[in-house]
Image (cartoon, rainbow, N blue to C red):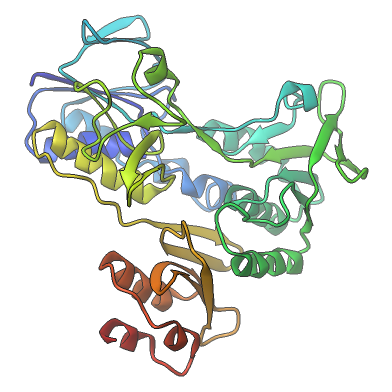
Length: 403
């Protein structure tokens, strides 16, 4: 194998190329990114970076010199426009790049508001890229009025940063409660109380009818008939897998690029990893939007491109930072039918343990790293914990590991 091309210079693309070199691949290796920056971390964008607590260079996953030193041809600001599968060539910014193996690590894009409801007005922003955050940063001034649309983790993290900066924050969630898609009501209750204590006006069961303004947004009309005056709007209504390049090339997609357990697409010469993929996990097609998956799946795909033939078995974990609370999530709560709450040793610390029947599936731990670590070790090992013991704060967490 002489030529490997990787399209998408995010966390997965950076991990995949670095792993190929680590495993001894000595052929031509090209990493293509549409953004002008080298691969960088996304999680700090809406938190430490936006708050001015992290410099841009610290966002970079590797120093710029790393790519040259490891003979990785990094093409930034370059858009991949077409894959010619019969010729095994990908067209990038007017160049044809031949490949023996092609890896798609195209990630995801922010879901925006349609123009019909004012989504194209100036001052309506999303939080996905470095350019997004750089553009919105000047709007974060004391006393500014911001509307956040969406009560998932993206919206809540944006609300926390805005509130800490002294903005007047209103958050609307069309569903009955915040975190409806991703967490239990117990976790939602915890974060609702946290945000309310910091002055955020959370409105659940309330949707956005339309934004108002001539060229720039100045107001919002909500589904309950209320009107808001706003200085800008942050849209946090989820992300979409970036599978358009693959779909245009005739590769099988279904709200994500379909891959087998090795990371191979419907074309044997083309592989995929990260947010853009839909892969088999516990008997179901699964898409994981996390740093863990981006790195681990990308490294597994790198090995499989070189012939390892090892199935990818994720051990999911996630996190979210809001104010002085670190939420750590172990496992995947899909299909749970019961949640057990465990109070932590200090005020404001607790964890929620998700079960299906008697099997532990996942743990949400708020400022409780011990609960997170114990839960993660159990879940990764395929073990469970007695719900009664979990709920009893008098039972030492470490005893759950030997139960």
